[in-house]
Image (tube, rainbow, N blue to C red; front, side, top):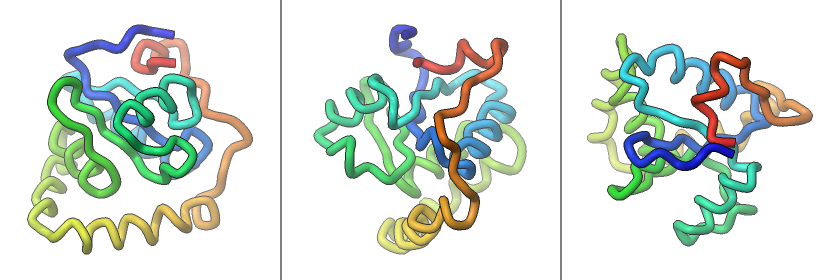
Amino acid sequence: MNSIPENKKIVLFDGVCNLCNKAVQRIIKNDKKDVFRFASLQSDLGKKLVAERGMDPEEIDSIILIDPGVAYYKKSTAALEISRELSGGYSLLKNFLFLPEVIRDGIYDIIANNRYKWFGKKDQCMIPTPELKAKFLD
């Protein structure tokens, strides 16, 4: 397992979710400033990072963004904070932060609760290609 870099933001994601894996691939493609590192929620590191923030690793059904030494974000706020760092039109999504979190998270929860039904599920976590391996912490 790679050590946790202090100068990178960490994205924790559902490693068996097809939608989540596509989102990670899109983040990597548009992370021109090399801001992010990734770990699945199912990994030992993912469970440890979630527990360190006082959340139950078995009950997390969300993307989590950890900005080391600053804060952590989950659900829609995590997604929008990630978009802030991406190239292209994705950075414009940050403008939705003005919406109340309860509304944003309500929409997020509908998608999260149906993601396996709508997008499918893998039997195991994605295995990154050798060139992407350095971006994954486990």
